Length: 175
Image (cartoon, rainbow, N blue to C red; front, side):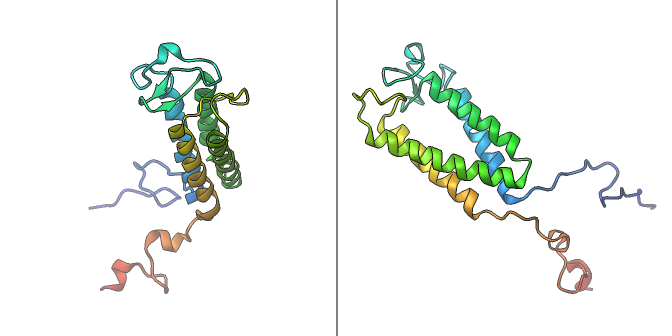
């Protein structure tokens, strides 16, 4: 049986072209989707009990994402903006690294701020109960580590195809 012609990229004609991305780009995109999802869910009453009492900013909100994490309109908008930014910056390696490191530091500091500043303080411009402060701190550290530790280069083409040291494929080497 005659084999169908291949494209210049090595894919069959019926397979879509795939954009190869580095691990750090995938991490930025995943973080972007996570924060985008959190931001959207913060505006949906099904996921946010007490949504009718949501405030724009401050700690006088009654809305709690999943009934645990206090949220406000400002918090949800912050998550949405960070999420969309991650989806955009995930297209470029350098931008992905900057996005993850900067966002990680920001959210870690936001978590520390929520743990340090008392709820009764006028400096408390974001809702900050312990769970949301710990979540921001944990996500901040996780995102920062993604930016610092994830590989920034693509594997060599031979490694991606599973070839050995001498250029032969593993299938061919077993013959």
